[in-house]
Length: 269
Image 1 (spheres, rainbow, N blue to C red):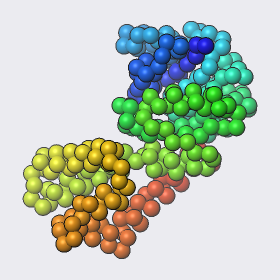
Image 2 (image 1 turned 180 degrees about the horizontal axis):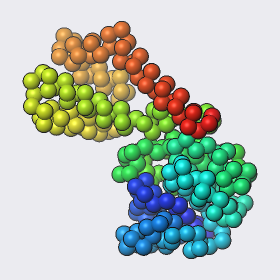
Image 3 (image 1 turned 180 degrees about the vertical axis):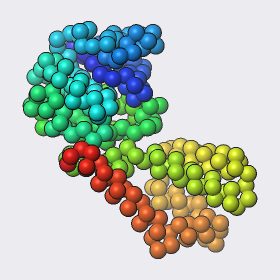
């Protein structure tokens, strides 16, 4: 039986999902997308019916994927409440938007909702999304959500909404921490005598290569780190500084805690 998937919002993340769906889905899917730039998007994607509003949609849909900025939910979601049937799955990829708020804006307290938090690499299909299904989501609907979200990369399911703020703090915001690490590595290289462009190129490619190596290895992260740190060598000397008084771990503990706390404020949890 054909599945009808509706995407509301086709910015960077929405477009990444759409591209993934078109590349990986079989013939049993119909895709609709709602966005103010529908005309331009229709020239970019084939196999999708675009519209500026809900007038293009069939009455019965299997899944509605919401890829809007959180500030738009209260305005836009009520326009789609008539499309939330008994078998309709709602998937949100917006930060800080709780399942309860989504149900409220849709006037659908029993709606089947999956709340997901992708991160920046999802735009190239290499991200990770923490995801939560509420009690109304059936096993079949959860599998559909898995398929929809897999277009962005890996999907990690949690079983309680209380974890979502920590998911956002760890992986949602995580790419920024990696980028900051790249900056400070490059700056340290400059202070050790490297030209700035050389230092940044070395730092960037080190982060990229290390991530790919970690992905392809079956060793733990700790074992990978230890394999480089030869006793008495340069890497061990640097790690001894980073690990002194547990300073690096303490710094990250504070950073993740701050992001988690901010997420709770934004989500009202």
